[in-house]
Length: 327
Image 1 (cartoon, one colour):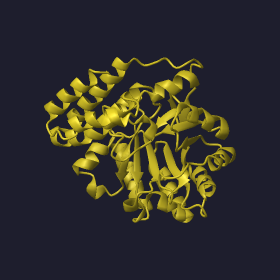
Image 2 (tube, rainbow, N blue to C red):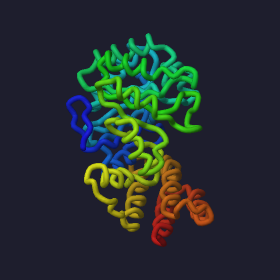
Image 3 (cartoon, rainbow, N blue to C red):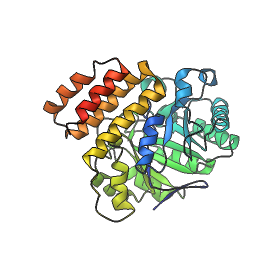
């Protein structure tokens, strides 16, 4: 069962959610290996004056990365965002994704991300200009609204479809909820019922059972997986085993999991270099170990205390290798 974005036929209905500080090239590679149908870049500023910074360069989709390559942009000015979309396409993006779902204060305080949902007229201008600016599919991610009393996702969704957006992802929370409370799927179900373009559900997909409940309840075309994949990139394969093959999950050997964890951390060091690599690797090491020990904090804390203080690449990798060998 596949998912269509413009002319691109994805191999899976499970997509990796763009996550700032997380969905970098090494993370995208490991999730794609386990069956993510599409992996998008981290959120990229539309301010092209920042494009030559190390952070922006690392966030751009890489030309040697398997396609289709999706770049997620964020901003508030229609022309600036259209220029950014063109720039990303010129530098290898096959799909442009627009962020109107980020709840972070530093983004919303600039009236970007999910703050844009307060201004449907501006949303229309942004989407129309970006779609007109590029010859590649343009997708959009939104939330259910700004606040509990301001749920307007259906209005924004219709604007998006009319503007030429080819696929819509909806996080089942308002901006004010951020990542607290519980996601609700009734709004997503209504959007799917009203729109003819493909719709993705996102938010609170914590288990395989959650994934299938959301599919059944909303009738969406696919799911966008975020935090459930932290330290567990094989979740894409586990869900696809049932979703695509209609079969029981094939257990992934522990040795494969530890090899995947180690290879991912090595890839982080290669991508970022020693100083950045050691720091960025820590959160991923924590996530992998958390899943390997089964969230047993009594077992987890001694392991992280042993690894987290290390500031040297070789020492971090050697210690990690030793820790993983006990599983």
